[in-house]
Image (cartoon, rainbow, N blue to C red; front, side):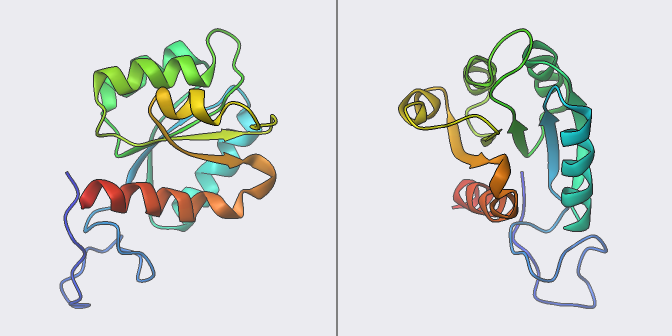
Length: 147
């Protein structure tokens, strides 16, 4: 899936960020969130880190469909959506391909849902109020997949 990053600056991939060591190609990120504003902010954050948003979805079910279609490197998933919850969507995604990390990104209180989220295959939970932790968590879960 993702290769190790080259230390050769001459032959490095043009999209490779110098401060990240998660792969030799830009990460392909799927964003699943019912808020257009949140998706726009996430697109900006992800592209500023030389990664690529390969798809977006406004609901849990459409997120599962995009997941099946696109096979991203990582998924950023909201907890509360109009059709199914992020935890339910994560279960479907993880059953389909447990190697693709899913990060729950939510404005809701996460106390008490950690165990349920982990059982659903969610690798990290990031509060939207702590968006600065998102990039670190993406790098962390992708590095875990490389090892």
